[in-house]
Each structure stands twice: as structure tokens, then as C-alpha cells.
Image (cartoon, rainbow, N blue to C red; front, side, top):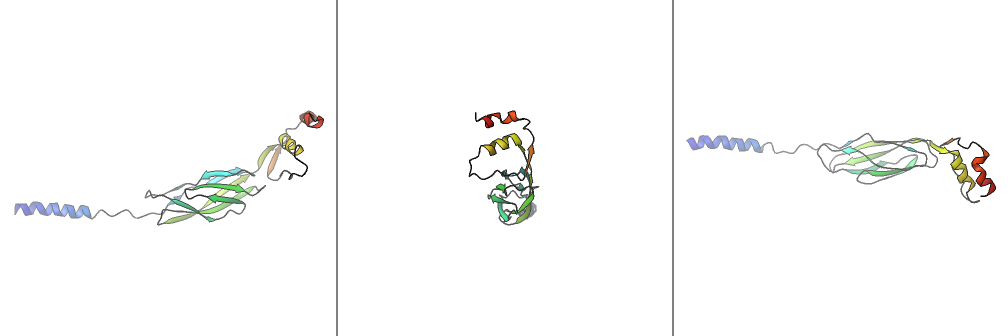
Length: 160
């Protein structure tokens, strides 16, 4: 009888301990605040942020293209965004991140600011272009007035 009294609590403890073996329920991954800033005609190369509460590996995919640029997205979340030529303003694209079972969709925001350009450098580049070359873009640029006198261009004017 004593053996039976000792065996019953041990068997009950083993049974109860076995009941708590279930895995935690899978939770969908969360996308972070994915906002990026660039300048006119400057490519962004970065990585999107997402987390998974269960520690599952995540796979990213493009779910909607940008309207004012082009996007390339790798499965690991690394991406490149190329703004349309001379574009400034806001753009976005939609991504999906999956843990293999559940997925989340979110928006990536891009702000393309005006590029600040030295007028002296820009005008020198324009002056030295070949005759048939494509004209330099001016939209999406804010020129600093750093050419103060004819002396800034003396070498170009005299051919030296």
C-alpha cells in the first residue's frame, strides 16, 4: 500500500508536466518603422526592419511598386530604391514579410529631398561637356551661389 501511495503522486506529476509541452502559438511578424530619406538622383541602399516574436526566420517580398522610382528587394530585407530622374517629394512601396506561416504587409516611406549643388562645380561640368552630350539636369536641385567673379572661371575662359 505504501508503494501505491508513492507511485500515485509521481504518476500524477509526470502527467501534469506532460500537459504543458505545447508550443507557443505562432504570431505574425511585425514590420518596424521603415522610413528613409535621400536626395534627387541618389540611390538608397539599406535594409528593412522587422521582428518575429517566435524567433522564426523572416522572408521579405515586394507587394507594391513605388510610383516615382524603382525598387529591388532581396528576401533578407536588403533593398535599393532609385528615385525617378529629377524627382523630389514623397514616394512609397509596399512589402510583405513572412515567417513561413503568417505574414504582415506594410508600407515603406521614402522622402526625396532637393539636392544642394554648387553652382560653380555644376557650371564647370556643363562647360566641359562634349557637344552632343545630354544636357545636365537642373530639376530637383538647389544651387548655391558660390561663383562670385569672373576669376572663378578664368582657367576655362583662357583655355589654360
